[in-house]
Length: 351
Image (tube, rainbow, N blue to C red; front, top):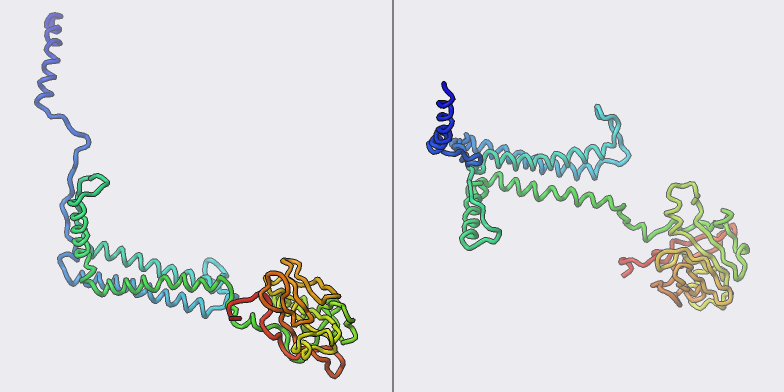
C-alpha cells in the first residue's frame, strides 16, 4: 500500500469510529440488576411444614423459660463455696457454671426462636422502594402504616398463637434473671441490725485487757470500753460484730442520774451505753467528766449519759441505746439481755 493510500485510510478512521459508536449504545456500569425471582419456601406452600416450624419456635421459647427457671433455682440452691470439675476447664464454681449455662441457654434460645420464626414463617418477599426525603409526607406515613399492617399480617403474629404466646412467656421470664442478681448487692440483713452479741448472762470484758470487769474496776468519772464475753479478734466476723456490740461504761453518783430507767438498769451508778453514735455510726470516745457528756468526734453529736443518753447537740437523731447490767454471784458485771433498741444510725424500721 502506497503512502497516499495509508493517508486516506487514516483520514477515514475517525468517521468509522463515530459511526460504530452511534450503532452500539453506551453501557451503564451502575445499572440496576433488578431483584431475582422470588422462590417459595416449603412453609409457604405446605401448612404442615409451617406448623412444624411453629412448634419448633415454641419449643425454643419454652426451653428459654425452663432455663430461666433453672437459673433462679441454681442461684437459690447452690452454695457459693461448692466447686465441680468440668472438662476441659477444670475445677470451677458450681454456682457460676450453673448461672452462666442456664442464662446462656435462656438468651440463645430466644434468639434462635426469633431467627427461626423470621426465616421460616414470616414473609421473605424482597421489596424495592425508592429513597425519599427524611421528612415524611402524608402519603409516606399512610404507606408506612399500611406496610406495618401488611408485615404484621404476613408475620403470622396474630395467627401463630402458639409461637406468639411462648415468645411472650420467654420475654417475660428472662428479665427475672437480672432481678435475681440484685441479691448480690449484699446479704439480706434479716434481723441482724436489731441484735448484737450481748445476751443475758454474758460478762462484760475489758476491751483492752480482755479480762472480765468487776464494779470496783470502774472509778467514778472514768470511761471504760467493753465487749461481750466470747468474742475474739481472731474471729472472722469480729469487726462486723464489734461494730454493733461496742460498749462504754461510766460510773456516776447514783444521785446524779436523772432518768429513772437508766438508774434501774445501772449497777451502783455504773451505766452501760452503746459506743456507736446514732448519727452515722462513728465510735464515741470523748468524755466530759464534769458534765457527764460524751462527744462523737465525727460530727460533734453530744449525748448526756446522766439523762438516758439523750442527744443534747449535733445531728444525731436519737439517744444512745442502754444495756441493762448487774453483778453476778462471782462479782463480775454481766448483761441482763441485749440493748434496749437497735444500735447505730436510725433506719426505717424504727418508725
